[in-house]
Image (tube, rainbow, N blue to C red; front, side, top):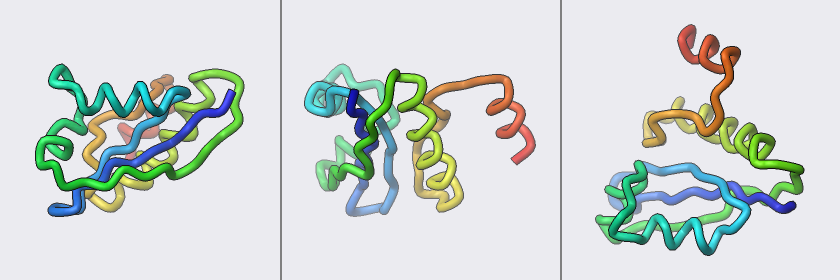
Length: 101
């Protein structure tokens, strides 16, 4: 399966959201939906954003894709502009790492 890591960046504030999906069209339509309760909502509502694909990854399952996504999120948190409030896939090791960061 081909997974996609993507970014939605606000062109006004510089804030960005990182996500992943195996079906990017469906996932992006979810971001645009009125029912969007994702952290991307404020960026989408400002209606001044850029959607970009960061990486296409051949992977075997959603857990593997989430691990790649988390690398982008963890790097993004260092910029203070990444608005993801949590990582995509949690394990005890990752929770321990985050507690000590």
